[in-house]
Length: 448
Ligand code: FCB
Image (cartoon, rainbow, N blue to C red; front, side, top):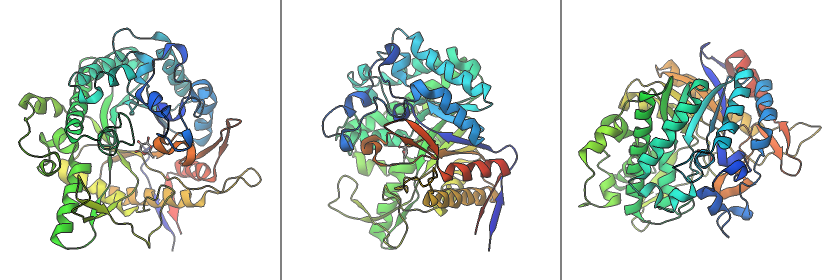
């Protein structure tokens, strides 16, 4: 039986990337180093010693890349601005040449009829600010607010959709708990401060936008339904704790004005409370929420697995991507419905969704990435099923347009709809890009 789902005419179809993952030339034209630039050059941090010095060379090849987007029929492009190109020291004197790059990119997008969706911070913090304590420093929120204000002022005439932060949970979890990302600390007290200042920074940027901005502004979070490995009370409590840690950690404060109670079990009790005013700030209303969805997490109680006392339970019978993430499209629908029920009718975008697979070698110029095509179709059907149940979903962005620098995994994990051969920087549309092109053109997805 073939299932066909049609999307509304005003649904927005896009692709997503981020600055450090694709741009290359990280220090060009007066840019300052970012925390990721330094981190990726430290020995042993990134698989195979990879770094973002060249990446997809998008800083120099952006015009060709926009042309590929146009050929694919993309209606929107989500990318991020490298804060340290605009403010090499993170604050103080702006660098007009860094800004010019984004102006040129935006002008090219505009000429191609592609709407920009711009993220202000996708993890690459100016190194000068990291050295002052980064997000764990209370002042970082205001530094971010000032940077955002400047960007709204100088690029606001070219952009209608802004996003403050990408996945604050990952910044906190990987930066301050697992130490896989900069600043590579293992400190729950610092994690708690960083999380709180990220939220304050987000809200300050939203306030700056309300004062001097046009269009819409939102926040992007990554969500993963948490399922208990059994009905045992311990496993169910473990599941609730991880759900609070990952999914409610940032959304409860933004929409409800307080942190989930479960966080006390992780951060500890008796800590100095944050000022009440902070929570009023953090509740500053936003126009939309961006959701990044990849997989689900099945968990069980495990008293020795600190700090969460939780273990991930791999679903051996399920399909997995090259990241070893379970392919679980139903979870996307679950997340979308959960948002609607818990936080209300805020307009939603899927700002990232996609999969890394070990792609087959090109054959007669074609890369038949059928696993990625199945993943894409399955998730689009799930998104459409959520819309049929009343979710106000306004658009979908595939992660990612290009094979790129996948953080601690370097170039070993390919998420792209477009293959890039690193030696020649030659771009090749994979079969998934062609399927996506047809989906966009017909506004429908089918699965046999
Ligand atoms: C998300 C990130 C994105 C990319 C994908 C695979 O968590 O936002 O940069 O790494 O995962």
